[in-house]
Length: 205
Image (tube, rainbow, N blue to C red; front, side, top):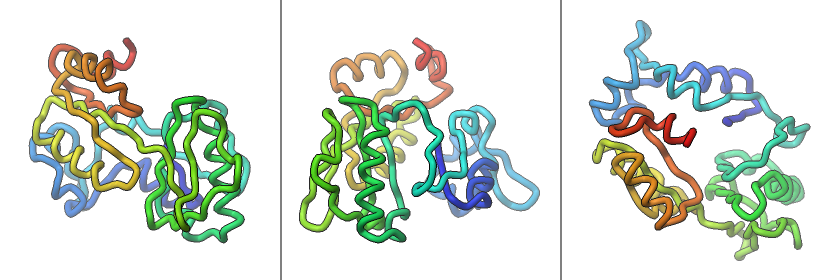
């Protein structure tokens, strides 16, 4: 689920159309399989990938309609606009929205977070102040893709994110199954089209 307070930004995300410059680091074979050129000069992501993400307008300081719990929440370039009391309240709401015992929150430095209030996190979630920054549980990620190039790109991008650790890579669902048992990652990135079994079937199993 991806959210923003601005309906125009949400519609842009839902459209899934990217400027050529945004795809410079995407391997050519992946661009050919997953993106189609548009008359306006951009590239549109295919329907299979688009269907994996729900885009919604959401005011983080308003009502949250989500009923299910989340395994991971990424907060980027948001809290920088809030004062410290509002930030503290937001971290508490995030913590309450996480899957018990498994949830993780990653806040980028640009979000400029204030430390959380005491006892703001439920059991199983690690949120603790460190100086003037918020220190949270590191998200351990397994990257699964049959393209070694794409695995390297995804791993490199994720590794640059604060609070994210790429703990392993796998080339197909069979390797991924073994890696999940061995590494116990928090999150897995998954290619849709892979040998032996496609990503969607793997998720269902």
